[in-house]
Length: 172
Image (cartoon, rainbow, N blue to C red; front, side):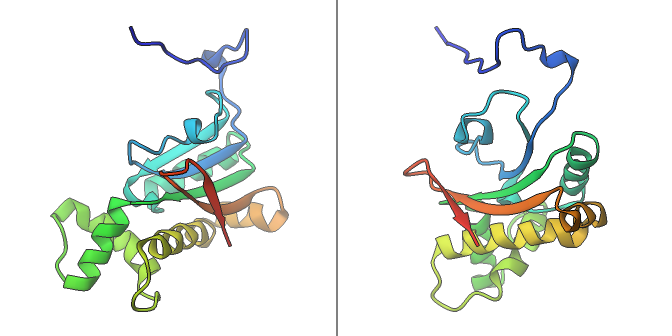
């Protein structure tokens, strides 16, 4: 028998709306579920997921909606150890061979974060660089979010979830 968890407070009625305090841009990896990582009840996090936790147009629009319509005051870009999207990007940079056509867009979104890294860097260095780069992209690509961060009403941070320990490492 499967037991379904429900972290909602008693009397919570999710069908009446949502009021998340934070937005999380996370990898689509099935092992990284932001609500579970942070032990949050439904309705607390506004989550945008894609391979490599990259910032692309629909995801950026989702973040703008979270800020403008839902009142989100914190945006977290969360990478994770052993990220296959970052590994694919590292492989494409090393070999010059792009993966399958649809995966190319994932690699192209991550590649600018990895190109400045020194030779011999670790995979975790690349994952951290990508999360930090994508966090900067949120502000660089969205005038709406840039305005809110300048006003001090929205903060943007990045972190890396360690699959082995279950801990989040906050990045500079």
